[in-house]
Length: 487
Image (cartoon, rainbow, N blue to C red; front, side, top):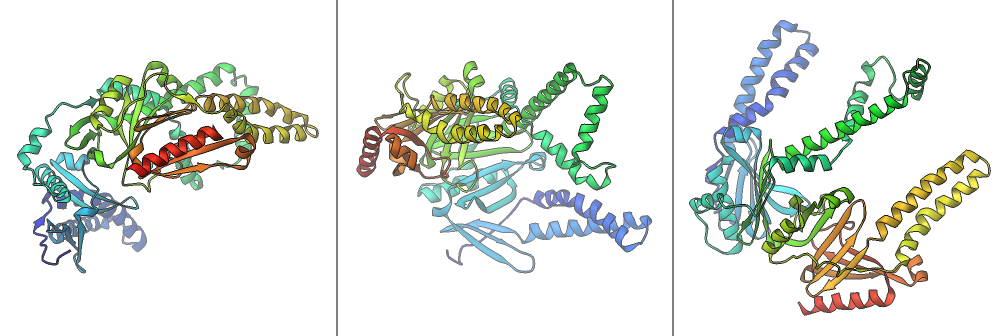
């Protein structure tokens, strides 16, 4: 990090205009209302205060743009900013894991882009350039990648030609809508109740009062309005709104999805309102996950996710969507492009021990069953909960009976789940740690689990082969350990 590195470039002048527009709701609407109300000056002063706030906002936006500079130095990306206290920061090239290009609605309106430099520091973005021209965004990404990898900087003209290449996977509008229908969501119900709770003090009734809902149900039942047909209609409306919510989310996130082959990886473009462009280098890919469900699988659809380095602190464990809704042939084509991952041959996966189901049923069903039987001696109506226990047992059996695995040369395959079906594609050379686990119940059943720890994941996202016979678990553990030692 040399102080001789010069931050000799400014952001696009449109940055000041975008900053001004973003600040309008707070500075020109909310602030004048609060100031007028608190000072008692009268509503006739609202427009003058709003005009003054708009002028101040414009000056501040221009000063922020004027004082922000950046440049590419010998050791890294240099950023200087600050109106009163100046801050100078250098992000070394060897710490930069990725450079993403994002285009939000205002950026797209003015033909600009937002450049985000990711270093993997607890999921934080250490460098954000908001906003630059598209040509400058391409130049920055090419220059940073070239400096990091020790190569020559590609010219913007070459990159512009690369943008026109055909995608190895793309989603047209009908498939995006189908994805939204599969991603049925009832989050909107929580949003409605959250909004009502916010307005609770202004409502003529108490939302938290259960008698409110019971009295309403009794009144409608007495009037003959609470019928099975009404209940079915309510459920259908809820389902329809759930589908609409899922479609809206899919359109916003996945519209125009394209995955292109990039030198040494992939380039992904997607988004309706915020258009994002992310490069996924192959060297950062640690494993692949093929996700599906009973309905999707019956229709022949799955999703392909790539677990990568960086952003490991996030809930998704650093996973990038490579094909949100694709057939097996399309997924196989994407995996072939990676030159790292592949699907298992049909029928090669082998089941874990049959005792796997019994180990899951014991603590999850046995304890609740005993509690219900004991409570039923004092309150017989509690025995009706046995139906829920039986349903839980069926779901556990369905989930656990699909657990399979296979160590096939340079790949470890792990399959789990019924409602949320997952197939892990783990390159053996990416495994950093192999762990053999044996819990109290496993030791008494003669079982053991093998954990394959890879970079970029979380404790809950790493692939695990559960409940193998001890001899099979030992053989798998030794094979993975020997493969790791040969690297």
